[in-house]
Amino acid sequence: MSPDIKLFEDSETLKIGLEKSRRQILDLLRVKNMTISQVAEALEKDQSTVYRHIKKLEEAGFIEVKGERKEHHIPERIYGRTAEVFLMAPEPISSGNTSAFGIAWNDEKVKECINMLEDIGYEVEKEGVIEELVDHFSELDREVNEELSRSLDEDSKIDFSSLMQIKFLISLIKIENSGPELEEVKEIISRFKPPE
Image 1 (tube, helix red, strand yellow):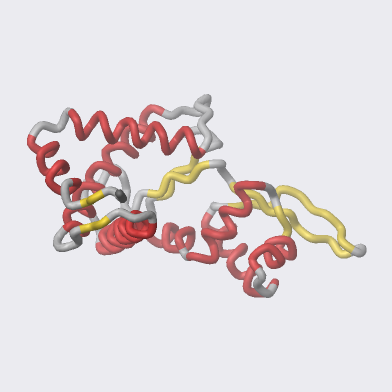
Image 2 (cartoon, rainbow, N blue to C red; image 1 turned 90 degrees about the vertical axis):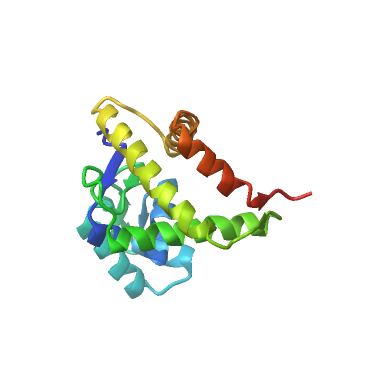
């Protein structure tokens, strides 16, 4: 894997990186390296809270100290991400099993997607669709992440946007070539009505 891409599979580590405030910190650090006081100001949180989140992220391997600066003669550490892109798989890619955490994680992600679709005007026939999408996304995401982790080596360079595009393209190719599963996906998609 490239230093620009880091794979996280351990559920305990994922829980640290997926917590809402910590995700916000990681998003800020995608733009630029920052001190605790800068992060606290940007998130409008007190420094002690941000410090605890930063320490958890550092211990889990999401961020690291990148330097130091002095503000009024007081040294402050500057933190940055350990990779530009984090691939997060709710269970080891090679396991083939879905843990309780993985199911809950996928369920939350599907619900977020459905809420976003509704916010932009899509109508969603929700009965059973969440469970079916969780099943399909779990398997598809595991397969795609497995292919990517095998093919990206030390010399690979990819940014977040390109990674999302390649994951989307691989997913489309897999769905199109899946035979009977394609019909199941079409049936699920038929329960989504675009805005008029």
